[in-house]
Image (cartoon, rainbow, N blue to C red; front, top):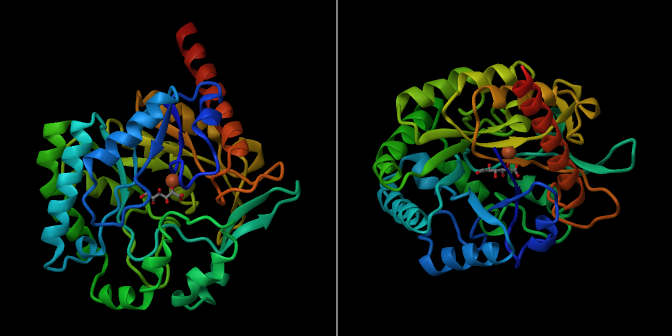
Length: 357
Ligand SMILES: O=C(O)[C@@H](O)[C@@H](O)[C@H](O)[C@H](O)CO
Ligand SMILES: [Fe+2]
């Protein structure tokens, strides 16, 4: 595996490449052209400028998170053809630039959903949290406003104000899209892009829905082992793979994370590894990465990745806000650096204990 950190680009991130370079064992970053809208073709010059800037700091651009999918593709409206063409052009350019892993998601309207961006934990750190009763009480059109005040002045991925201004229209457009339709639209999209992925050796890595169930009555399909295996089979190409995100699949306590990892051997192209602390099955908060701070056994998760021979990029995921840092919620430097170091420690121990046997 290659340890990486997500980085939003010098115009948007409070964390610098120099700081990332100084985290022991982090050799790459996962980035995106943050200023682009879903559906836009990425300019080659912009891709190369991003890559050059990262390499000049002594790091590798290990993959893209995300090239976002335009809603027309998820809905399956006639204008999807143009957006798929655009997506293919972007993939070709990424391939030509030597980038071989692309993360994306297929969630309608909202990317991840949280009800609090700064819940206080007993140690005084603040974290993102989710409470089902709070979601049930929110008018979806107001979801964005309800968290906008806690973003520390940043624009959060998946919650761009321009898109959120049209939330009501978006809901209307999805009204005939159920789980089956969403599966069919995903299949259509993947079949169209696979020849390009084959040509340029691009691993597509779908990110799970977060939380892993339907919110606001919208369809959600990338939520459990059964559905993800269905997706792998429906377009049975090794380039059709997944981002294994423990914090997203883990929102549903019925998901057995190490078992899911083992069942996806050869198809996990990217890993997000983080812990959650459950207060009840419908109320959870994002804990430190350490097993004992949350609900998941992080050793078992890393062991499963080791056992399947995972060799893609991995990153710590959302971190807590600690030591008075002011940054994008979930994406400060300090706690993610602790997370990376901890995950590296687990990996080293697993590797060495296997070699001794
Ligand atoms: O929760 C996060 O911050 C990320 O894991 C997602 O926003 C992820 O980048 C997207 O869903 C992938 O397209
Ligand atoms: Fe994730």
